[in-house]
Structure formats: structure tokens, C-alpha cells
Length: 436
Image 1 (tube, one colour):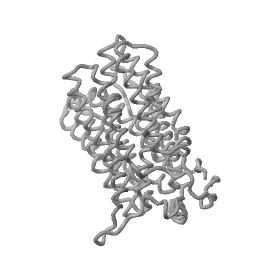
Image 2 (tube, helix red, strand yellow; image 1 turned 45 degrees about the vertical axis):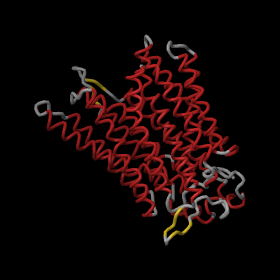
Image 3 (cartoon, rainbow, N blue to C red; image 1 turned 90 degrees about the horizontal axis):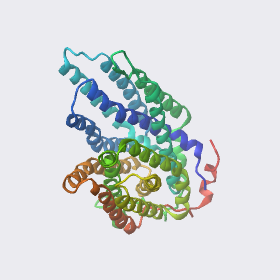
Image 4 (cartoon, rainbow, N blue to C red; image 1 turned 120 degrees about the vertical axis):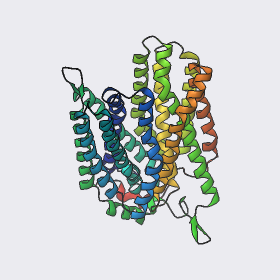
């Protein structure tokens, strides 16, 4: 049983384009809000938090709608087309800011930005669910590793373009039009290749014919009929809730550290921002380098075991940082490399554990559930950790992350479903061992 890497990389082009966009959004929109529209930190924070709030509703909604439609591609194509048009419209609005009417200019910008965020929310869940649709269940950790790697490449593309495509005029005002155009062009190119190379209906039919590589007895997504309605058996539902709890606790801990680490470093170290940026870059590089190996290891030892290894590794990293991060040391780069490996171990496997409980007709729904939990945690944790830091000081950051990561070990250890089945019958999958 082997993953078709060529096909998975092609399917990953949708997530590749999504991550390229969000890297631009997170990096550039705050600067535009500050420099062009003059918003203070509080207002910028509110605007930048809207995407998470919208995601809580849009991602599960469009995931479920794509289930009902039975297709992911229409959502991907329409969402990308709208996003590209609105991205270029936003660039035009920014470039033609009217200083004589700042309120009107801000309102036009804000309405366009909200429309852009909705268009991006339209297809994230369908784009991620597409990989699960065309990949055997036992291989989804490896497939998710490829998807995450593609996302990292998308973000890297935008980081490079942010260095070469942003120009300034004589007055020092930045011009982001070329950057916006380069990202929009990448999105169009990526989705065009996806549409031309991936035959969704054919591949989904092939997967259904082999029951996604598992026997009926092994199928964890089987439902039972109760009062005329299909429901998950109680033990499977319990496992799903435990997996989702693990996801929420992980993001509560991990995202608190990554969100506030630069603030911690600049308040604690001299030259803190430079060192903090390097630490975060080391963690990112370590995660990217780990995605594919972790996917392969997970297929051997199981997803749950790999998640537990990741959680324990992250806990060890945060514990060391609790005592050693008060002064900068080269050894912190090693700590963050370990944390990057941990992040990859958890991310690569939690999504497939949720998908393992899904069936071919509701992958989008379960994708939406994952995003609802993860985005809720990412929305709540900055507020929670902010309270702790205000009361206890900056040194509370790593203990806060440590506690939630350790708590995440409890539900994942209790979950009895969602793991992969490396021993699934090989005869059903021989046709998928070669490239298209």
C-alpha cells in the first residue's frame, strides 16, 4: 500500500494557494491598516480577528454544503475566482486611497475586505476535504503531511515575493499592487493545474469502489440507525469528541506561545525581536522538514502514538523554555526545533483521525468540525493567556502552554477510534501504487 505522491501534490495545490494568500494577508493587511488608514493597535487587532470569527461559521457551513453537493471542485474554483478578483480590487482601493475622505475610503476597504474573507472561507474546507476524498483511509496521515508541506511552500512563495515585489515611492509609501498581483496569479495558476489534472468524480468513484482501503469490519465511519436517523455508535462518537478535545487543548497551548513569543522576547531579551524571529523560523523549518517522515512513521506506529510523541516533545520543549528562556541562548534554537517537530507530529495526524471516523459523503462536515474547534481555540487563547500574563508576568507564557499540551495527552490516550490501519488488505490498493 503506497501513497500516490504525484496525485497528492496536485490535490495540494488548492491548499498551496490558500496558504500563499493567508501569508500575504497576515503580513501585509496590518501594515495597510496602520500606515494607510491610521488604525491604532486595538482597532487593527479587531479587524485582524474577524477572519477567525468568520471561519467559525463559514468553514463548517461550506464543508457541509460541499458534502451535500457531492463535489469539492466547484467550491474551489468559484472561491478562488472570487478571491482573485477581490484581491486585485483591494489592491486598487488601497492604491487610490482618498485622504480627503478617510472615513469613506476605510468603509470601501472594509467592505471589500469582508467580501474577500468570505470568498476565502468558501473553499478552505472543500479544498482540504478533497485530499481525504481521493486518498485511502490508512494513508491519510501521509497525505496530510504532503498537504501541509504544500501549504508551507505557498507561504514561502509569498514571503519571497514580500521581499522583491513591494516597492516604495519617494515619500516612503509602500506599493503592494505587484505583491497582490503575484499572489493572485499564483492562485489562478495553481487552481488551473488542479482542475486540468485531477478528475474528481473518477477518483472518488474509485475510492468508493474499494471502500477507501478498509474492510467493512474495519470501517470506523459506519453509522447506526436510531429513530430513522443515522448516527455514530456511542463509542465512536465518544472517540470523536475526545479527538476534538485534544485538538482544542493543543491549539490553546501551542498558539498561545507562538502568538505571544515575540512580545515575550522583546520584553525579556536585548535584541529580542531578531532572536525571536529566528526561533520561530527554526521551528517552521523543523516542521516542514518533518512532515513527510512523520507521515511515514505514523503509518507504521499509528497516528495516536505519533500524536502522543508530539505532545510529550512539545511539553518537554516548553518545560525547558520555562526555566531557560529568561536569557537568550543558542540552545533555544534546539528547543524550537523540537517544538517544530512536535507541531508537525500533531498536525499531520489529528486531521486524519477525524477523517477516519467520516464516510465518503460527510468528509466536508468533519473537516468543518476540525476547523470549528481549532479556530475557536485560536480565537480564545490570546485572550486567556493575556489575562495570565497581565496577572503573573511574561514568565507565565511557557507554563501556560505546557499545562494545555499536557492536558491534551489525556483525551488522545482515551480515544479508541480514528487510528489508521496499516495492515489493511493490500489487494484493494494495488491499483493506487503507481502514478497517474
